[in-house]
Image (tube, rainbow, N blue to C red):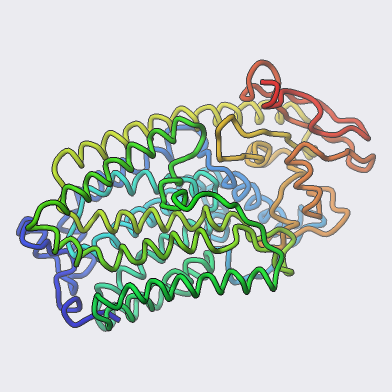
Length: 511
């Protein structure tokens, strides 16, 4: 898979400038040795990275609350208390849900959610760092600030937890392929079924990136540009094939939008300034290294492979259709472009990891991370207060009532959360607009006419967009919606037959 030079190079050995302790970490070194050498640093960094999982009562991350709610429904199904619902056997897009359900049976879903999400964050964060280090062949600690931000980027905040988990595992597998030997690569192969259980995208990344690296390292640098062009053509042909076989939709955003920094564009326009700041520091870091004669050639050689993969991933995010409607599902495979930029973001860190930055670069990344997490704390705090309001209203209802929501994204936000009635309903009520069962993409499924959840995706989508006309058989049904002077202020009322659920309350257009 890799060249003889790389195969016998130290896994994290710096090129003539890391400390002797760091130079001693070799490809053949076991994970246990690495942990023994850096365990204090790893524990401290991990504790800092996990703070956003615990700084509010609930982890606000889009679809996460739906995952937790459906884990509760799975418990009801297994105990025979969810008429009209059933559990499907499936081999992918299920790892996060299975672990959450099993741990929830032992510790309760609230505690289990915190633990499983924290593990997923650490797998993503340290897996990305392992990949950066594998390309750099040293420990570029300075990129940790960027990786921490991307670990809580758009993919995480949207709550795409199975996809997120598959990426974290795939980063580990590719890092092992880059640096491992013999039985260590067998371990990387053993991760593939686990990655598939989480999401097929992670397997696709490991196979395609691994194959590209294998071919690229057999070619001289002068021919590797042709390989990049060939990959771009394959992506173009793939796009044309998908468009000819399935209905697809496009986003049509500018090419530069897919560079990975869009992962930081979350709950408002203030994140754009932060992304521009981070881009400026990253470009300055590369420029300052490239202009030093002693480093320019070394930087080009070290960054060649991650830079090529970075460019190809940007091409993939731009060329692959954003939504693909497959016949076996009732909703499309959606937001593909935005999902792929999580990979772009990590590969950008892989390029940065090959540099020898000045101190101002570290200060710039640290400042960007501080501002990012300050924004994130404030915005997720608002969402957390909204969920607490929803739970307070729901607890005034008799047990077993149907609840729906009509929510709108905040101005400038890329995150839409339709699931305030989900997690807050656990143990007390039913979120009738729960989107997972009718999609046929998750293990909880619904029969038509069940009293717990809408059995078709058109209904769940209409509920989320405030366009659902209530039927007599839906009653009694209660709606939680924005009211008052701000979208974060919620009210609840009982709906009548024939009315549309989004007519009441505050809308962004009239805010």
